[in-house]
Image (cartoon, rainbow, N blue to C red):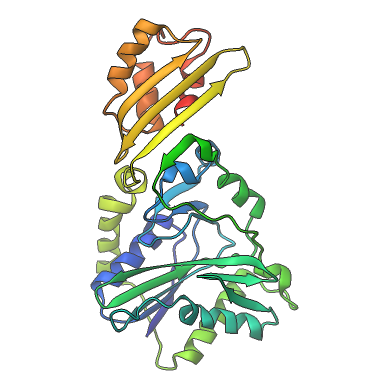
Length: 327
């Protein structure tokens, strides 16, 4: 067993690092890391259906798809993430409870009555502080989870708040649970770095053969390459979403109404219909043909709208107002 704490809060690097170590090392690993504010989407989810995109953009929150399944989670600097990468026997690799046990044991020692509940949740007094997910690769499994230490739960709830009526798809939906922070239950106050030290102490007790590990310069270069080709790309973070139907009716304060219907596959708009009392019908038919086969991405569609400088697609609303109806 090799263990280490990531020295960066870059979420692109930390998620790419997990995949790199899983697929390029034969060793078992335990890793701790913290990310700057980030929404982390499950592998099989529709990104736009899981998040409050407008809020995320407003607050410059990063949006990244991870390698494992499960639901969307929010990371910030007061959330500590852990990751096990372990070899095992085929068919017996996934075991959420076993890999979560060191976390539970550590918290119990600190006087926090943490429990494993349901399929993969860690709770305190019935409230969730950790969600877990896994990914199997050959004879290895990667299990990782959050540990809400003293995260901004109000912000978490705002960023994960989305209108479910806008999307129809077969993607995995997140199950919203009551959440809490570990720090609220500690008999003796700790900061997140001290808590991290306690977790590492528990790991080295459970795995006495564990040795400290550091990434080499070569490792870092390879991880950066994985960011360039995957984790930093729209195609992975948004385009990988399952095909979906999007329908939204937007009412503006001046009485204008705009209704958008779209069919999206692999992030590309295959069909689009634009209706409402604020459209110029003939020019909107042209707009529909231009938008078709473009990506369902705010920057892309806004560029299409702005390419017509006379703004003859819509009446009584601006392009910046119209774009809200597409997301």
